[in-house]
Length: 182
Length: 285
Image (cartoon, rainbow over the protein chains, first blue to last red):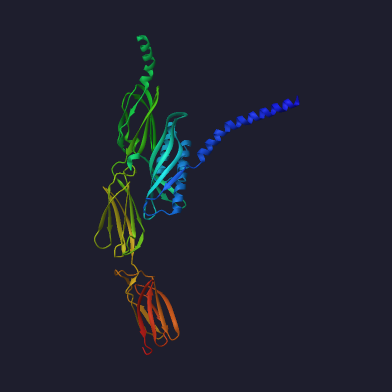
C-alpha cells in the first residue's frame, strides 16, 4: 500500500514538474529571444573616403546589434529608457515620440528580428560620421492592446547614420527607405 | 437554385460591406497632407504607423481618409491599417523628405598649418525642415573665406544626403571661415590657420662681455607668416671646449641666446626639421 502511495506521489511530482516546464519554457524562450542580440553582418569593402579600421568595424557591428535589441525591447515594452544606451539625436527623439504615441493609443509594435546585412558606404574623413545601408529581415507585428492587427515578414532597407561616442557608436538616424532607392 | 444564390449572397453581404481596401498614394512628401481612399462601408478603426509616430482614430469606410500634415513629418515607410467588422486591411507607402532646409556641417580640424594639402575636411549633411535627410542629390556650395584674399568656392553634389570635400589650407595664417550652403540654408565654421615650419632661418652674432649674443632674424615660414612665439629654436656652438646646445623660445618673432665662446667657434641654428645658416667666429673677433 505504502509503495502505491509513494509511486502516486512521484507521478504527481513528475506531472507537476512537466506542467511547470511546459509553462516556463516558452516564457524562458521569449526572455531569451528578447535579450539575445540580432545577427548583424557588416560589409565595409566599398566604404569611402576613409577606410574602416578592423576594431571600428567590430565595434560598429556590436553597437548596431545592441541598438536593434534595445529598439525592439523599447517598442515592445513601451519603455523609452531602453533607447538611452545606443540612440541619440533624431533617431532617439523619433522613437521616444513613437513610444509616447503607443502609450496614448494602446497600439504597439513588436519586431522579431531575423538579422541585418549592413553595408557601410561612407566614413567621413575626420571619423565623425558613418553611413550604412541595412537590409533587415524583420517580422513586424502590430497590436492594439492584446489584439494582433497586422503581421508582416518584411525585408526592409534602412539608411543609418552612426556617430562615435566615448566608448561606443550611437545610432543618430534610422530611416526605413524603399528598397529601390539605391 | 435562385433561392440558393440569394441565400449565399445574403450570407456574404455583411462581410462584403465591411471589407476595406486602402489606397494611399505610392509616395508622399513629408509635411504635406493627403487622402487615403478606402473601399467598403461601415465604421472602422484607422491606424497610421510612422517611423516616429503612431495615430489611431475612427473612420467611415468607403470615404477618403484625410491624413494631416503633422502625421507625415518623418520620412520613411508608413503603414496604414483599417480594422472594421470584416477584419483588418493594410497598405504601406513611403514618405520622402521635403525640400532642403537645413545643413549640418562638420569641419575638421579646428587648427591647421598653412599650405598643407588635404589638411581640411568638410562634411555637410542636408536635411529638410523636419530633420529628414534629403536623399535626392542636391548641390552643396562650400565657400572658403580667408582673412585676406579672394573667397574660394567649390560645389559638391550630395550623395544619400551627404556631401564632403577635402582641401588644402591657404597660405596665410589667421582665421579662415568655411561655409556650407544649400538653397537658403547655410552653416559657417571657423578654422585657425597657423604658420608652418620656419623657412630661411638665419642668425647673427655679436661679442659681449660674457660670450657671444646670438639671435635670429624674425622667424617666418615659407609663406611669410610669423612662426608663433614659444616655438623652440636650438642654437649649437662648437669650440675648443666642445659642443654646447641651447634651446630658446621665440619671443616677439625672434629667438636669442648668449653662448660662452672660447676662442674660435662655429654656431649653427635649427628649429624642428629646419636647419638655418652657420656662423664661424674667429678667435680675435
